[in-house]
Figure 1: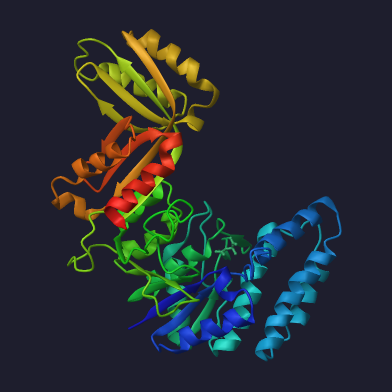
Figure 2: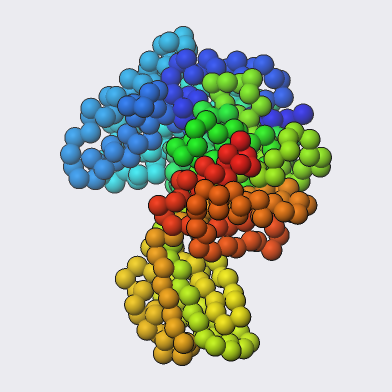
Length: 437
Ligand code: ASP
């Protein structure tokens, strides 16, 4: 067995967290590859080192002294080193970095140092070999990952050293320069490493016990999802759930490697297992895996008696395309169709869009409704259960919630309901209480 573990910023925020990480890693000899973020917040009012490094670079750019910020960062690293009794003379390397900073220092180079130093400390503490991401994560000229080259380098490093720590979030461009990924990119580094070494599982350690069935800001104490498929996760993410970014899932999904989200602060919790297929449904009997939603959509309803064929719809879609407004859902009736679009995507173009639809489609009428929220109930088990949608609508109806639009994916993986923005939170709570809680 081989496990790749990625630890997020809160898991390596200070010496106490490092101790938890060490307990987790050393408790299982299969955990041989560790990918680390930069030290994050120790408390809600604390700062992530990556944020401080970005701030520091802004100071450099504008020629404002950033010494205090650098001193804060240095202090954080030295404190971790001293509290853990490590030998790494981080001051030497850190001070050399500071001495070399100038207006031309690239932002990527500077902000990558959060992951670099954190991982060096962690490697020593775990007794693992530090393998710099510039030597094993490569980009192509167009900014994509050079998967072949990266896979080979990561696999070779593990062959050579047996147990390794790789800093997340950055790699090397073909010109030899350091390049960082999007924020939160260590998740991607972890997935790349897991795919490169054909891990049996990719463990993503964070500060929650898995993906929750609903937003905890809306539903009090929602349950974690024990098992979810990549397809369900995608639907939830699309509908606004703050879960892992798709890019960070792709490398493991492609290889069929399960992804386990775990909590560094509660390592006994099993977390959420993300898998390609769930062979047997055993854990519980809930038809819904998770609930998510987004506010602020506009519905454009076009009515035209005896619309035959799809020409009118095609014309309307073409108009929206011209204004770069993505249509999220389409519902159709005999003489009407309705297009659901994020209000922000229409920006100031709404009236031009309507004018064009009127001119080209010659409808009997066009109706616009804004202030719509979409709520999605996602669940692989809905496919096999007749009556789930009926029960959903009944539950919402009983609470006096008016449903403005309904869409169901062809794969029956999700049911999406449009309600007024003002009913958004209530709708999520009704669905959770009735079907997920
Ligand atoms: N440290 C980086 C950030 O804060 C990357 C990461 O943590 O994944 O975005």
